[in-house]
Image (cartoon, rainbow, N blue to C red; front, top):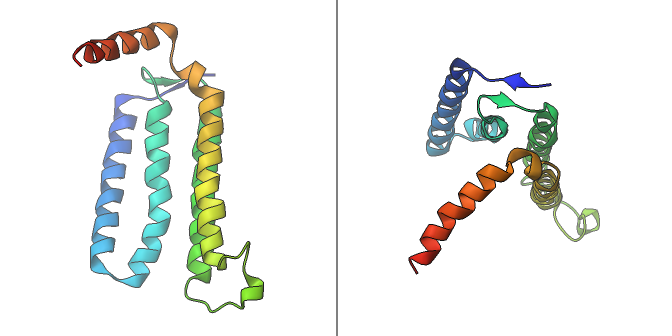
Length: 152
């Protein structure tokens, strides 16, 4: 099943992404704690839009699978980890309640966000790299890179 992305759809994605980036910058500069909390949940949308634009190739998505994995998986990992980090941030916790020796907010950041992103990205690379780059494109890329290697 192929999914077509029109130029209008891509333009809308770029505009919405730009608006979200502007929101992120304004909220960060404002130092308003409530805006910063909302900003944590704006960032997964930015990444989701980048992934959506990245899996599109020649105005179509060959398979809807990358929309669910890694795009939606990463979106969920980000939202859950940000929610947990914000929920446990600044709370005094007894050392016996630490997770693997870490404060719960740090454990959420490290175990869910960092490791979740790493595993999701690495596995999606293994699963989808061959589908996303055909042999002609790969050879064209290697030829282009070889030009720069000859300059050294």
